[in-house]
Image (cartoon, rainbow, N blue to C red; front, top):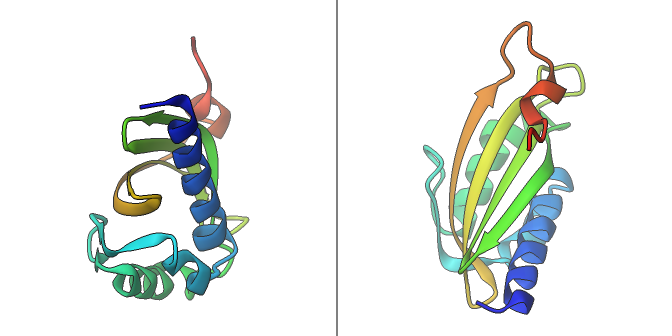
Length: 132
């Protein structure tokens, strides 16, 4: 895949994360998803509406300050992987997440995610440090 396509895929994912998770502009976010968008997050389901409804019910409404900050992003072929930090509120402990996105025809087609709480006695900086 050409560098321009990889860059465009990363920009799409970055924009979606900003619009969906941080700005909670669900109408705009829906336009960035394919009609059969499949979200593999438990309970999220298939389709843009189901994804929005699930996030609104389980995160945006109970945690209006929910945010996702991306720390790293990797693009290969039709996929973008992000490593980030979720906060449900400013005072809540952070959660480290990895999200995998598949892009199809310039829109997000599929999503998987895994998360891990920051263990007690460990700092967020230790969890996201680049140890290369």
